[in-house]
Length: 396
Ligand SMILES: *Cc1c(COP(=O)(O)O)cnc(C)c1O
Figure 1 (cartoon, helix red, strand yellow):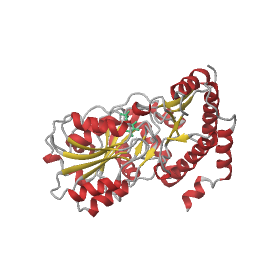
Figure 2 (cartoon, helix red, strand yellow):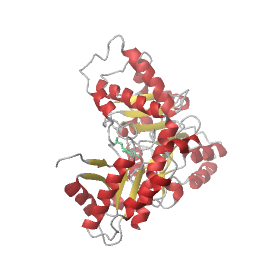
Figure 3 (cartoon, rainbow, N blue to C red):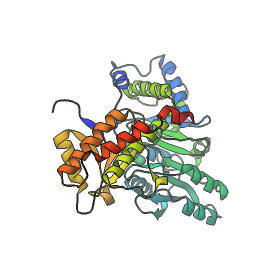
Figure 4 (cartoon, rainbow, N blue to C red):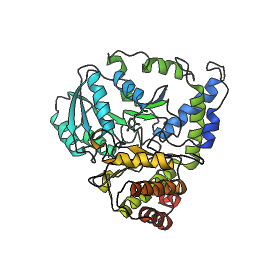
């Protein structure tokens, strides 16, 4: 197929040209004497993106799932009770990992389309006078359903109960794209991955750990080796790694962090909100629903669109890809066939999203979903034309 293909899954996201060029480097010596000159400023800048001054940001050569495991094995023990909620495929998978690693997980099952049940967590934490709960697991952005949650609210609930549990947060599809403040919100373990808001290929896990989390290492007896904080802390201190790091990814990360700092985090967050609002306007224009049940759950990085009863979202995805070269995100597990997803995070603007919305509309009509030609594109276009530009939004 001539022309470009459209990548609108919520990760991997589009890699900016500057980052692609930065990744394309000759092999280099990861133990070179000047490695620290490169790594130390990068570690410092990552702390700015995570918004932590006292914590540490680790880089593991793995996908985001590796950082889930690192967070658990370095801080908890088998048999520990942890509190978690399941409301989508990613929150489910982290719970599944906890269980497979021998934690006792108290799961609060929530309707898919809702998010972290802050009130229920608050009640459980107050009840737990003996402090049996060692950690609370949250997902800031549930990528499967397009639901964003109130992590600051979970911190408030922990503080209100005067509860010492660690706060874990999956921020794979949110950190670097929407507001996140590791230190201010008291997040102890913040997980991310390279292929979403960081606009890189998959292959690097980013993990923020607070001083409180780091202090848990000595009592955490779970077996760990590759993901041991101890080896990372010892070598990172001078700008090195305990094993061969993927240098091309680190060069790419340097370039993507530069782009993020040039744009400014607050401007990035405003741009994501602005672009997401246009996508939601398009869905409204089509007369369709999104999976997120209420505006407070709306995700600014991904929208899951519910197809009308009697239609199969998989047909939309197949048609969009095969006929027009557009990749949309699939519905996972409970919502398979019921939703398709448009990822709108990373290196993105109105121009790119307009093409995705236009083609999505065509694919839906091709498979018999009764949306009016031009309805979604018109609604998004009018939203973007008339809304405040992201820079002005961020300035407020
Ligand atoms: C993508 C994603 C993951 C999984 O990350 P991998 O890099 O595929 O291991 C975990 N959680 C959320 C919320 C995600 O969006």
